[in-house]
Picture 1 (cartoon, helix red, strand yellow):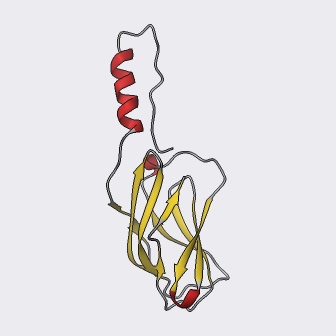
Picture 2: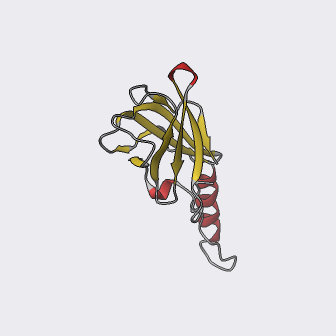
Length: 132
């Protein structure tokens, strides 16, 4: 999913090295990285890219958010994610008192908060979100 593979020419004298690089890429794990956050949203937001998907953890506080206008709250490294074209990945997030929020990730690495069902003073939690 998140792997950047090299095209292998079987007649090339580097095919074995290129194959090893592809296998390493398929089995790689970036470890937890801090995403670039944007005001007015605050919090701690991390991501990890593995062969099985993009894992998210942390929380954000949607200060001043309005359901009338989606807001970009973070960006993750574009080379970490697969190109999924013009389709955004949509995920549902937990919020206090049984409420929820809806977020999206696009192929540019932009994370957007699009809807919040509870009060905008309640934190939105990302733990357990996997995008693949």
